[in-house]
Amino acid sequence: MATSPVVPDPELVDDRTDSGRLDDDTGRRRIIAIVIAMVLLAEVVPFQLSMVGAALQKITKTFSGVGADINWAIILPGVVGAAVTPILGKLSDMWGKKRIFLVCAAFFLVGSLLDALTSNWWVFLAGRGLQAFSVAMSVITYGLVRDLLPRRYVPLALGVVASGVGFSAVIGPVVAGLLVDNYDWRAMFWFLVIYTAVTAALFTVLVPESALRSRQRIQPYGVLALAVGMLATLIYVDKGHDWGWGRPTSLIWLIAGLVLIAAFYLIETRSSAPIMDMRLLLGPKMRWTLLMVLFGIGGFAVVPTATGYMTQTPGAEELRQNVIQGVLAQAHRTAGVNLNPAAVHVTLDPGYHYGSGYGMLSYALHIGVMTGAVGMIFGPIAGLLARRIGARVPAVIACVVVILVAIGFAFAVPHYSWVTFALLSAVFGIGFAFFYTAASVLIVDGVPEGQHGIGSGMLGAIMGLGTAIGTAVMTALQAAHPITAHIEVMGRTVTQPIPQVFADRGYVLTFWTMAGAVLIALVVAVVMRHGRGPSSAGSTEP
Image (cartoon, rainbow, N blue to C red; front, top):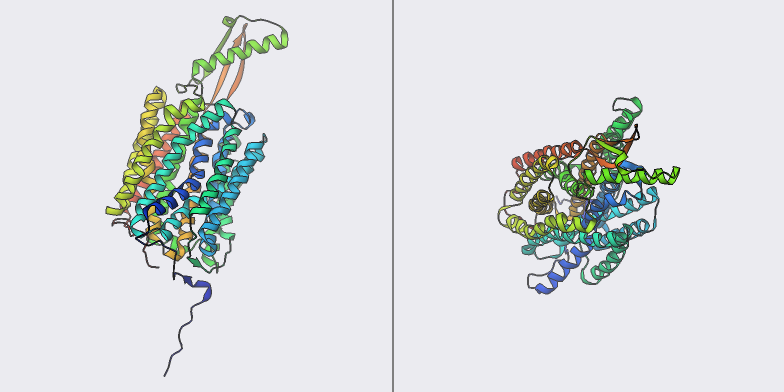
């Protein structure tokens, strides 16, 4: 008796007849040109992170009323990026990775334009939210590398992508420093507008489209529940100290956030077209890789933001003199009195020990370039290691390095020296390059070709969430340790809060918290089975 052939559901068919992969005999010049074009445009992601993170201390002068909430300029893009990256990753599987890549670039350009033109805090945050669409560009790059390049070049190319992140860590703060110090912080967003337009044109001309397509449907409700739930939870973490951790009006944010996060799992497991394939997400390769990234990435976001802020803060004595000059100016302006500076006594409560009062360029040249320069060297090295022995070893090395660096910063804060900070930032560059390379290779090796956009989208979502959580924790610890000036003038004492300057303990606790989080990532990296053999360059079967 003849049997009828099985006809697969067309919604689940992956078209893998041809990905558009270049042949092994393709000229190296063309391969190099394609990789450079991808890296240059994808660099807008680490560019804006390194620029904005380093410039927060300068940006806060325009938005002086927001206090420690200035860190939402970093937190919000993490949350938005976590929401849109899985959707965009799946769309890249459906409609083409190059096409979605350019759509992300367009959103980023519009967001940068908004921030270049505004002096309104909420409009500024809206621009930062639009810039978060660029987060998907980083992870789509992994898919393009896998789809287009000959397999023997894939691990090394992913290392080059990671070293490109190091390149932006060098160039970003330097460019931002030149622009901010000579103009103002908006100038760096004008730079990003121009940079994005030029590199997008280069990308359009040089990079071919991947021919891989997956015919699927999209139901975004689960990932939106996750994003809103994380936002509510982070608002609680950020504002709990001010509102009262146990107050019902505070707890409702936490409860609502946790309920929505739980709803994400229920929605995605029951959806006929989930954004995040739970079978893929909870499989051993993805599960352990994403768990490692979730706990590890916070340290990589917080360390450069915290060091940029601290080194650009004026030292305690300089701040005390600034307060005295402010009192003298106010007395002359309001009462016409010319006070003797010796008549004004200022005590900072508590005192603090960090701060060099650097401009942006000085910060970049003293501290920022150290991380990026070392990262550029070690990114390709991590790629070669992954190609020969697997990506797990670079991941373990990265976690160990960052734990040691975070502990070093925790001990260095009360004994501040910019030289110590520079040396620690250089060592941090090793962990920075190894971690990003390892994460990208582990994802590429752990996901079937037809679902690579989804897998990369999951990676981008976890990176966004980890960044947002780490920054929110730092914000909460800063806000919990403010500095107050006690000003004594002619026998009268006035107490005045000092905005945007925080006690040593806020930063010390931040670094210890990050060390603890990365320690969990290290444990995961040590025990996971994935990545123990040489990289397969994405030849995984579904």
